[in-house]
Image (cartoon, rainbow, N blue to C red):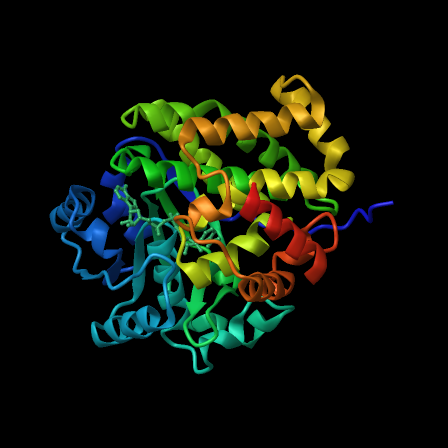
Length: 388
Ligand code: NAD
């Protein structure tokens, strides 16, 4: 019998809607930020989406500086230079503007700028976050430009440790942005590959949260509706990038996924994190590749839940029908069908499989998988994903 005990957390204010980026100066006032560091990535910094946001800040008389030394899958050196920029510029808060990479780095800068312990002391392990000086964390206004990670409503930032080649989840409740501007129009310029990868990331968050064991009916309900929104809108967002209705539903689904995964994630993420850290693949696209393999792997533990989901979604054929729907969606969106395809034809060696499996079973998301992950069963799962 599941113990009816849970912990819920939903405090962010989200200003959602097309055109609401114009409210950025007002959001800064509300967050009590007078001199923000505008954190984005170098690709975005060259696009009109950033120029337009900066013009809004100029018109609002906001004194800001831009920091854009952010890699996709950000690394510790990005954080170090970001903190230098934050301190030397005398900033009092962050605008985290971009996809998950820029959002996470912006959140991590505001978190770490005035801490005295190394960032790795705040990994999402037990209550390590209580080691931080909570009063030293600067406010954050988050502006997503992709629709996938949901980092804008999350309390974590993902950072790659370049020494150990591992992706670490850094957690603190106060890393949650106080205000989010979720303007779907900002996502229309995403290249198709990113629309697909981020959309599948949102789906992976909802699906893994829904399948995670434990008592969390609020997360389950949010995840269920998030899955529906992705299945019904990602194909349109992919085919017609300027469709603002589809973009808006995808932006909601992304925030819903990250809200729901307070309940837990699972093996899709436990595998995706080491693959991303070792081979620098796109996080959401990597999740998309693993999704059907992990569903099949977890079948004995999740079949009943997935059948309930198919009832809600109106999908025929129970568990198999759902997996087929995922496979069809992946094919329609051009998602690589195997890990080998994702890695451009590179077949992982035995030693590499061992290394990834060893990393996956200690990933913080592994504990949320409905079936226990062992080095042996993760190896088999990886071999399936490599072969197809
Ligand atoms: P990303 O932030 O790495 O961006 C990918 C690319 O898309 C970049 O080149 C960027 O310039 C471009 N881009 C972003 N928005 C664009 C737009 N509107 N128009 C044109 N180009 C645009 O991708 P992502 O998938 O959003 O984030 C991935 C990162 O988020 C990974 O590091 C992952 O580990 C992390 N993540 C964090 C959480 C969390 O809870 N904090 C959850 C999932 C993933």
